[in-house]
Length: 364
Image (cartoon, rainbow, N blue to C red; front, side, top):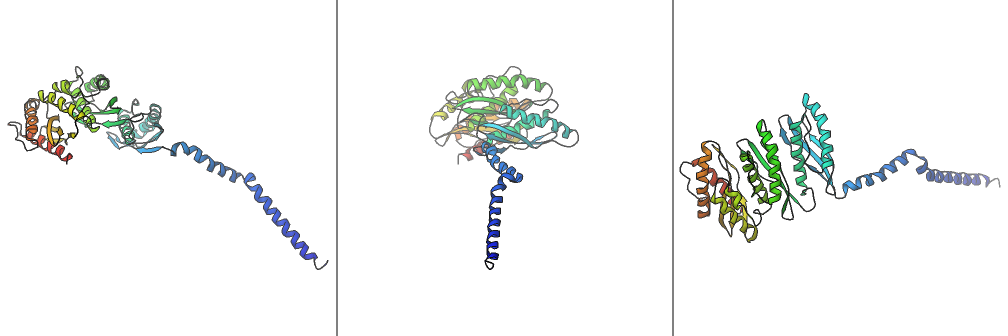
């Protein structure tokens, strides 16, 4: 017994040690506060993030330059809704830092609440608000959503008018325009008032007509003309030529007269005929203003040509009114950009030809 006593003591000590370790291990998860917090955090993260990760997108809009600095918005879109918005860039320095500090949080809240870029500007932060909305919309455009399932958000070209640029953004869903808005519009002095009255009417008219065949708003001829051209360029991106209705009567009111009426027929064909493309050329700068041409190509032939932008103001309006219809006819007749310049409109003719060629290049 005496010889075995040390062994027994060793065995008992070992057993006690093992039992103690087992007991500690079994108690630690419940008794270790840190372990409990970590487990909760690890378990909570998937739950909290689950709604964000599954089907969610983080989208960063373009950086929009304002008079006080760039504005760039990043959003999280989940289930077709904006769940978070923030400004990656915002005006700063001096007074701008204070203004941004007040305005940006309000704009973020408004974006989430509205679920779109259709939000009010913050008082005292007009430039920042405008830049925010544009960057926000560009982020939404990346999602390929038009604030509704199955739609497209299309932004037209920027059309220069005598009072400032006009650029239209539309939502097309099921072949119909469901929403229209001006991303850019003339502003400053009297122009702000005119745009404030005209743009909402033009937006409503675009949705109601489902095309760019809308009447100009009285007292806002230049803005209306720019709006219609930008709207048409947005529709062209959707591979549509204003649907079956075309741009017949509306086009006739614009400089180009019968050529625009002809455009309506070609646009109608574009919507129905196989092998038809509506192609918009680049905007070519001339000494008297930009020239941009849109053509319809059917089975490899130019069946319609029209100027979306043309020199205007003073004498230029008269020259364009005479030259553009002739250039349209010549482009269709030649089937190419190899056309003669119109006498007395050398710069406009040169810009027209270059824009036509850039449109043809898109067709390969």
